[in-house]
Amino acid sequence: MTSLLFETPTGFAVFNFYAIGLYVPNAIESIWVNFAEHFLAEDTVWLNEFQTFDDKSSAINVDTGVDEKLTMMIMKWHRPKKKLLVGKPEYKSVRGINCLHNELVMEVMWGMKHLMHKLVPGEKSQLSMEDHLPMSQGLQILLRRYGFDVEPEMVNEQIVATARVLFKCDDVEKKEYQNLCLIRHYLKKVSGIDYESWDPLKLATAFKIIISRSVVGDSDKMFPEDVISKLLSDADKYDAKINKVACLRAYSQLASAHRVRAFKRNELDRLVKKAKKVYQS
Image (cartoon, rainbow, N blue to C red; front, side):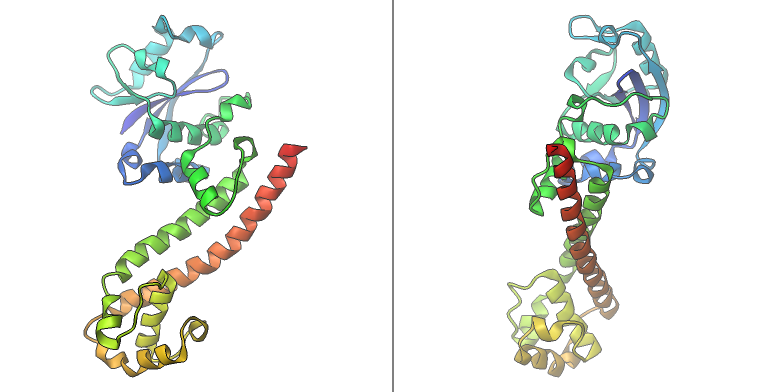
């Protein structure tokens, strides 16, 4: 647990922040997901105090640092030997506190801005257009991977929430694929089947055929007839080699993710087109 200093249009807020998300692999791609919706952020940040300032420019100054009023608020809630996450380089001059400002912290600050009025209910003013910058790198990475070029000003709650579902579908696929990679070699070893170009759902479907001893789903469209025939004829040979429960779970998870992703990809396309019209008008 660490502290977070967040600037709003009229003041500053101090939060407790569960910072473990900053240290996971490829954190830059996933931090934003914790702020996609309010119920998710509630497990990550907790408001300690919010104060308005008549002159925010004097509260933090590049030359003089942080003024006494803001320093006292920060010190009131900050834990000794813990870092303070800050959104601007000039915030790093709080006396006696080890402050952290980097691209990962800026991903957090994007999330705080995205949910500002829910996380800081005392703030009634709106963010300016400039405050929406920079856009979350992680969100931008996902949108571009799905073929969307979105300006920061176009991003709204619906786009973020829909993008989160796509992220979760990708995450399911990644995790289940890692599990399937532990057993996929049996396809070649037992049945002489080349699986190298198969995607996760195709792999899972092959093992589903083996376990169920029948053609399932769209497997007749995925595989040539000779591959299906080989999987069925060799099914008994896999009994002592694979975990059937785990394979069936992987198939169920991947099939569901495949369906949801197709639906949400179309929904995101509609939302982005709508946002682009508003942005260009």
